[in-house]
Length: 184
Image (cartoon, rainbow, N blue to C red; front, side, top):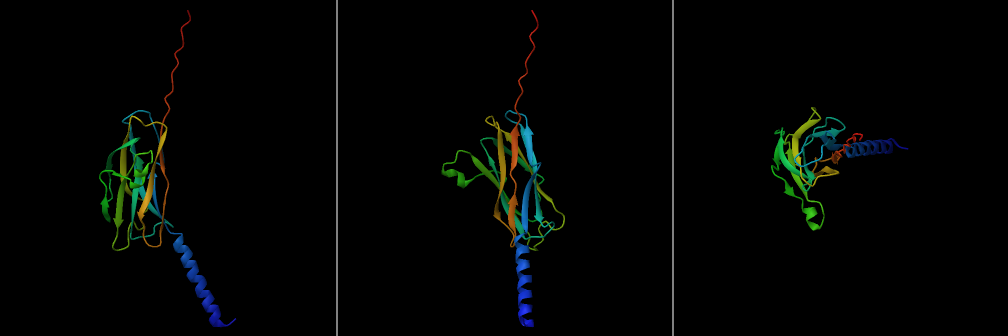
């Protein structure tokens, strides 16, 4: 095999390796805690932090856009605090109806959208994970069992894929208390 052919093959292998490495880059959105067990009943507070990180860790990106989706028949949006202002382009201060659900779904899905953009390509950088906000909901009178809060992408940085795990909120079952009958 000629030297030129070996060099072309070596260069191709290196380029392919870089391509696969780029495919492995992920932008990850997560909730902390990832699940909550709350007392049954209307008006119970459900509060959690939303975090951003990359895989591999601490990669800088140009930004991210995502939606936080929830079932408004079970949860009522109560507010956002600790919203990370750096590189924030826009966010929904009030929930929006999710269009995909207007076509006959039974759940009343609503969402909050967030968009971050760094013109310097340094979104989040080396200080990961980064808290993006704290979200608070209140349970509705129809809340029982469990409900999921999910995250879906609206945009990702070039070379990255989006990953997120649903957060699960579960209503604790009330225990019935039996009273002992007094002997007669």
